Length: 384
Image 1: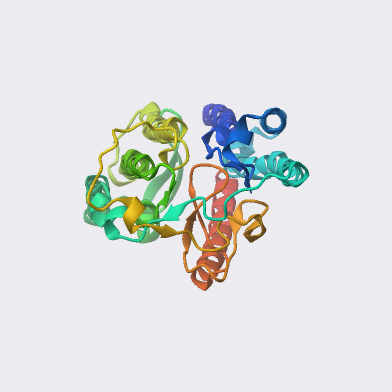
Image 2: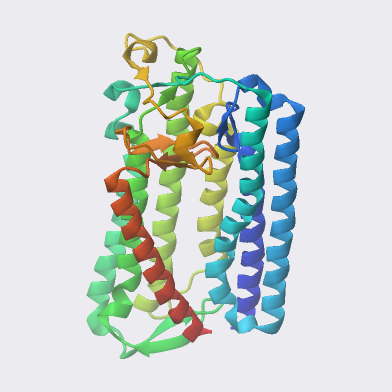
């Protein structure tokens, strides 16, 4: 495991650096009408006060990432056998790191808005209602998800067909050269674990893709045709980026399963890493290139008979009110029927946390997440 621990250490450093850089550039991806979750006049985003807050946020992110990387190095020097377990938790440290950089600037942005007396329209965006504007499942890049399901089913069938002929002791872990270094008694639970996890991952990615396609658009009423075109281009780019990541995850996990099912089968470790890093980098590249809702894109504007300016309706009361956004990030408005909304910080979608389906779904997700992390922690600790 020594060589693998070094690989895991390097991967940890790469993940920490990647997450840190992405966290630092989030203000540049957010719509110019928001400053750390606070609604401001768009022209004020380029002012010296706003720039000062953004640079302070970037500096705190940089220092925090350096501290996490140093912690990673200390752990590897003194407890190298726990490097695999540490892979689970270093990315989670990015979350409190980003909040430590974000929250003081959110408070400063609120004070700045109040002190300067900045006024903003309560209906800065129109919300589309038609299926044409909103998007439907035909817009989902189905080829990626169908191909992913085919790969997973092939792996599941191969595991079931091969199971009777497998030896009583089978490999369960492999080193950097993909040579087995841990074994366990044969069982359906072990043989089918990766295909079933793969299937669950596909379901999560598919639901995420559907939510992204079906989310209502927020159209700038001052430039409705351009805003609508930007949204459509953004959804197309993000749809394929998310779909390719889904397929890469399915293929990677299927390849990792093969050495257990087919004795003597080997695959270069760099292929496994590349199948995750390349599409992830592509997804991040699309987010950075496009900005929130595609606001940085410059697509060709085509006037249609179903213009968002005609089919749209004003956004729900409160959507533009800072009071309904806890920490400028978490939307909660009982009067708003929407479940999925556009975030105020970053380029992703968020939820209306006042809605019961969101509360129930969040509770289930957190419970499953905690249980899954506990199970993986114990499993990887024993492997170490």
